[in-house]
Length: 445
Image 1 (cartoon, rainbow, N blue to C red):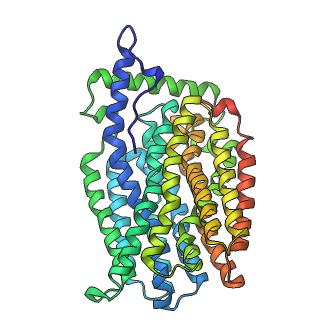
Image 2: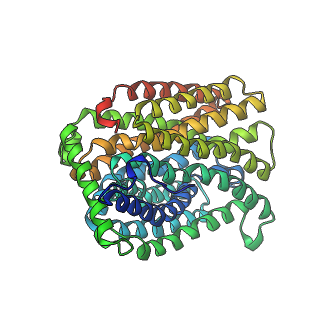
Image 3: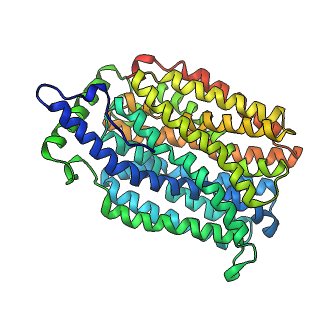
């Protein structure tokens, strides 16, 4: 991960204003992005580590693939139900307190997954974890709108969301090592129980740190000079005025609910997340089905797609900002995900081609996430952003329930994930077509 290093529009001007602004952006990036990156890394790890725990947990608890898929997905029912009200609360109370409290709660609940003993306890804990976590990601997207104008957010979002592939890059080998290392049941806990405990507790610690580290707004940023605050605020004010000039989204949540573009963006995000969650929750199982039985080996192999995805994600974010082009930078990665899933399904008996397909799919699907968020942020006014971003995120997160449950059910019915991958490819294709219907003038900034 590299910090923002400025651009042509940040070169010092005659009055030094742009030099001050460039300095402010560098400070804000180095102050905020690394810490938020780490928080999001554990956020995503806590959300999807059930995919690795599954390798042992299902046999230990005698759970079916359908039960696993429902449990993995029920997290998102709680997430969707709580997303909008949580983000509206964050908008009123500030990011520092809300983010810190959310992390403490979901980290504790994620660690408590070690107590799962039957389908009911699995469902309840997953649901409550989704409720606790719901406001984190849309809250962070909203938080960035208070620091960076539209033209900077593609790169900032790519840096922030590169935590997703990094969580896979680190989490895969780490989870595989934990399952392997604790296989003898040290401390009376199975490997999958140690996995939940050791990956949940750091989130609690980070939540406590967030209460003291984050600044709610420019006004509270003691680490910026008054000139830097003024320059950043002027840039944000100009960006807000530009959005009001070209946007038809309105300035209230009620107007957002009536806006067709917002619902279309929710459908696009749903299609992206269908691919993302299929990969996150089923990648270890697909690799294991290729004949790799050792959890440590599965962990290292699962890191390969995330490594390539992390590099490609940051590259795409820079390219989108430099060219001020958003639609093709989103639709092309979605088509890559489509092609990768088709390869993995078509050549499911060839480990090399499956790994190539999964790598391409992971690169495309995960890059689609940061390339998507500058779209709604570019034309939602500040008054509508809190509810609008949470609504779009909630619509997309419905895929978190549908995707793992669909794959699990199809695997139980057909003893293969191939049909599920074909269905997911179709959804991604529909989403890529919808991207091109978004008016370019609203987002290409």
